Amino acid sequence: MNLPKLYPIIDKGMLDAHGLSGGEVARELRGAGVRLIQYRDKVAEPSSILRDASVIWEVFAGSGCRLILNDHADLVGPTGFDGVHVGQGDLAPEDARRVVGAGRWVGVSTHNDEQVRIANETSADYIAVGPVFATGTKLDADAVIGLDGVRRARMLTKKPVVAIGGITLANTRSVIAAGADSVAVISALFAEGATIEKVVRDFLENLR
Image 1 (tube, rainbow, N blue to C red):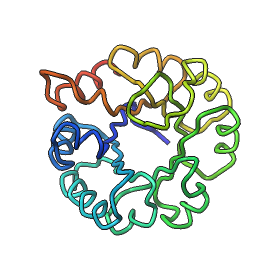
Image 2: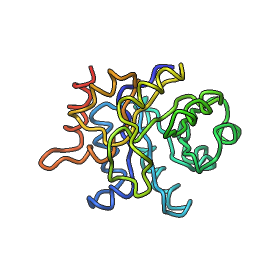
Image 3: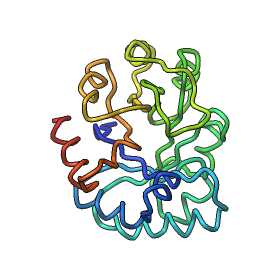
């Protein structure tokens, strides 16, 4: 499995904070040429998530970018997305797999070595580890694992590892060097005085 090195997450909370729509951000991400994105909405009703995710799907249609939906495995089919990402408090990876099917991706979040070991024994396609650095994106964020946590995860699994939490343009290379296959970026997409497309192009250039 060849995971793109950059994994932007379109987070509804961040969209609202910046007065942007999912469609607007999706168009900038497509313009930058990303190959993998996730849409995350932790609070809205399923009908609202379905509507917003469908707009994102329309933007990326025909681009070859893989679209992952956070949490809602049951909405993956209706939205046309390519997979689901589940957390420790969501559906278990095997339950998510039964919902989305064998042809779609299932990703799982982990926050310590034991969770990585457990995730490694599932059918999850990739394992997210973090938060690597301190982050303000999640109010209930787990303890920071640091680069050492990424290194340990790399030793514990042969599955692709996605590092998440406090990832910025300045620290991406160190995270990849620690063993991550991909870095998930949320708040760092929004930089004062720069378009999201420009920020993402800088990330992609830095990750070459």
